[in-house]
View: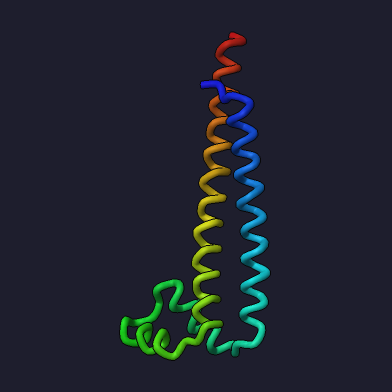
Length: 108
């Protein structure tokens, strides 16, 4: 199962784009969170991670302003991109490992 050179380049380009997007989102999150209290940041983090009861989450969401909503969206997007980055890295390693094994078999 050989990868074509353009597949490798596409994977590299995709990885670079994910990295750039992660950096941009991390900068946005830092900017958005600078004026929020530690308590609010903790509540938003708990909300993002599903650690709030439905009632508490609804209460928090009803009190959130634009900054809090944007920060929550930014964190969620960042989580998705980091997960995607892990999947791409796993796929790349799996394919390179497979290529190495196939190459060893051909040498024998």
